[in-house]
Image: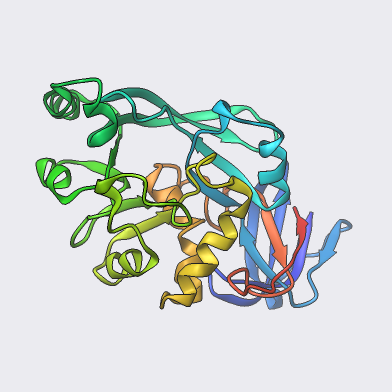
Length: 280
């Protein structure tokens, strides 16, 4: 299918086209270079963005149709993570919400803080040892500065990362939840914006079922209210999660060989009044 006359936000192409074959993007460009096709969807000046990505969920633990709800809201890829009750949780799987099939494994889930400490006296030692011997990407559940400082300089992606300082890689959220533990005291949109301004690469997550996965777009829209540029907020549920999950070669952008679908909105997706028109 050839998608024409669209504003491709993430690639900064104000009037462009996208060709999709077998769910893979095969061509992208400006309308002045648009090829001909018998299968055309005219975007009529609407906004085209890559399928959204929720970088941290527990969807398998509580489905109730949420894979379908997520897909219908434009979330085409989710990371499904083990819980944080143990220092070593296990593999994090990447799942297509369209097919409900696992399309990859992005790394291992580790956890520090109040959750694992309830059951393991030596949680810190276990986590540090696992980080040193890890052969795949490490995603570390952590909130407090004390725990974050333990892994300074280590090659980890912080899940939650509430008290991260400086340039970090953070899967942030969930933001619209209660402060249920002392280590979460600084959880807020203001804090997330501070991290953004310090240069962190941030992906916003739902942590479903902590907050519902199908409201991921809203969680990103609210970042704009607190001072994040609209285009940068969009990256927090597209390019940034793809980068942090290690799948930016095939998800999170409108580029050749990218998967994950193309979403058509009547306005910029970070506009509260935007409407998802089509998933292609």
